[in-house]
Figure 1 (spheres, one colour):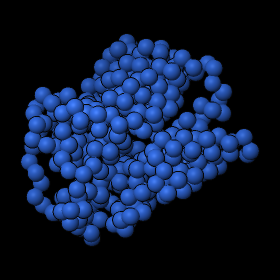
Figure 2 (cartoon, one colour; figure 1 turned 90 degrees about the vertical axis):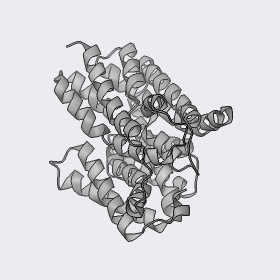
Figure 3 (cartoon, rainbow over the protein chains, first blue to last red; figure 1 turned 60 degrees about the horizontal axis):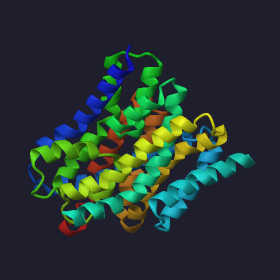
Figure 4 (cartoon, rainbow over the protein chains, first blue to last red; figure 1 turned 180 degrees about the vertical axis):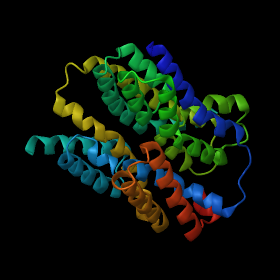
Length: 99
Length: 232
């Protein structure tokens, strides 16, 4: 099958899941409960995406655990996004040289 | 709204840098699945999603059907619907339908997290600025990875996979440190996600993420309703 067809389907579905709610929903939500749920949602999504997937992200449990620990510590001290991400990769790489 | 655009660009810089490195990994992966550098770039430019693209490449490599491709993308990327919906609550009055149609393709995990955690309403110019460097980083990183894949030692390309998650951690840990309810939401979501991974394994990855996040947020929304000023 042509790869262009695959890419068209991929891109089309991915666009629609973003576009439909973003374009059609116009109202301000009044419910305090729904507003509260939406407040917690992004952090819960990121957490669910990260754990436990991060431990399988380098193909080696030990190096991934080292990278995760470094990322958590640096994030706790409010280091910038890119510093936390690169330090996680660098520490996982160094751990890979040792183990 | 030049000022808004420039503010967006500067907020997008760390995301763009992170995306470059993460997309580098995607470029390597795509070439490994016999996809040319041009098509790898086209996938990145037209999708702007890490997990969805990785799964898409797997479907292409396995010669899967178009239905399978559509379903995979729908399930893995359905979280963007939640984010898009949540973001509609932050849009200022100048967001007309054509602008919404354009800006909707900018909603990625990090761009969303950055936009939603900003004080006050957001404008189309800010969103365009915020998306600019992540787009350049994501597409440029894909090309660089595709071309460099032959040159990079395996030990280095392996650890690239952790970059994306490192960015996620950098977004939610500082907030969880300051707010106990957010900390609880994060821990509950992680616990449910672990449950899906090891016990309820029949649930696919995309659904598992959505369910974990929705259950944790619904619980914390009931236990710890936020005050108006906290939301801003």
